[in-house]
Length: 543
Ligand code: AMP
Image 1 (tube, rainbow, N blue to C red):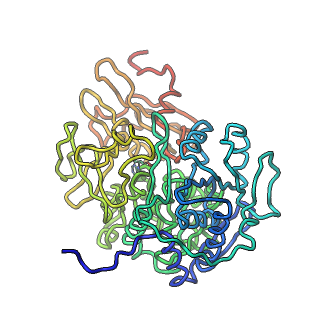
Image 2 (spheres, protein in one colour):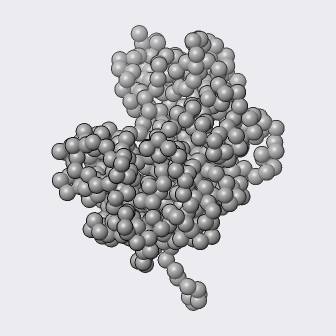
Image 3 (cartoon, helix red, strand yellow):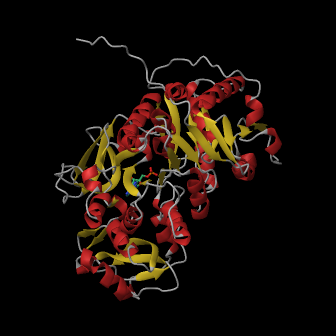
């Protein structure tokens, strides 16, 4: 028997319409590429999104067309999220840190017809020049007065909006209509595209609002350092207006001093980003001798938050939420917004919880399996590959049957490629990427655990643990380390520091010093590049 309830399709534009009506005082603060601070409300933004929708139509954008963005976090990028999906087209966010070859690949694979670009990234397109598709039109995201000199044939964002009506008669379509496209840079092969729907993005916004809503009363200021150009800025462009919080967009200023200055002057309460960004902020906090005004909450994800980083924030009264997810999951899968009882625990006990990646959010299910695909118990000890399914998880990759076929198990669950444990209380602990686990004498060693322990040494700024070939043990761990200062702790000192957390055979056999570590386009240490960069490095016993 069917129920008797309205079946209104979920639609992304409805989020902004709601915010314009229910949260007209909240909005967006942006540090613009023009150099100034810009303020707008969700009400005003809704009107501009209407104008932009008219402009897109005038440019001939139709339903299902892919429209690309190459931009920092700012109000214009936010407007594009809503206007493009609002008219039934697909917002393809491009990561500006992609190598030229990959960028051309995604533009061609997505068959983008139009690309919106920040002035700062225009040189990237100019360099691609004649390799760009002939029919790709370019819109520069600024006003007439700030249009840069360029050899490219370009349009101006603000000129396109000028004179357009702010009222737009938003079409209604199936909630499974594609709304967004984001490519992940696989470690091998070409980037793979996750094609979000209106339904998945709206549901994902609910999921985020459910875990963060209680911490973020209406009008609170939230800073997405996590980029709009990747993984939907962890859903904040949707969950933010839904919750009625004001989004503070950092534009190009992602270094510690710039973030500190913006957070301090805007009194941002909650800031969201990857660990590497927080390293810069923590250094600036140390230099200033105080945290930014009003700062009380941080979401850390994208790669494992080091225990020492969680400790530094918690000690200054900033609550840490460790989050885990993937592009293919919209992206949040687990969230560490711990209950008040955990937040009240003594620091060391609290850190034990917060070092884990949190518990699943509503709408996401977990299973961990061994190499034969058999389910493992959630006992906090059994480690296996994590598989997920849920309402905002990819069911395939865009126009890529091979990658799609390889990504799911026989039951239709998506294989994350992460190795994890889940404890009796539902806390997820990511041990490693399957391919980064170090196998020594038939036993696994978690590179994340080694890195965490080493990074709590004051002489270590950042490090990566990798396995190197060994004739007897198959692989042995070595650490590649960037020093925090002048002092370089010896291997013996690092062993002494790490020993309480490991069996002796798990400790690294060597330490390799570097001035910096190679990063991926999404701000993670690139172990692939790191290994390649080690050239003919050999285990000490083989030299
Ligand atoms: P991406 O699709 O670029 O967001 O990358 C997803 C991958 O990042 C996951 O499969 C994990 O390997 C890693 N990741 C994300 N968040 C965390 C976290 N909190 N701890 C450890 N690894 C993480």
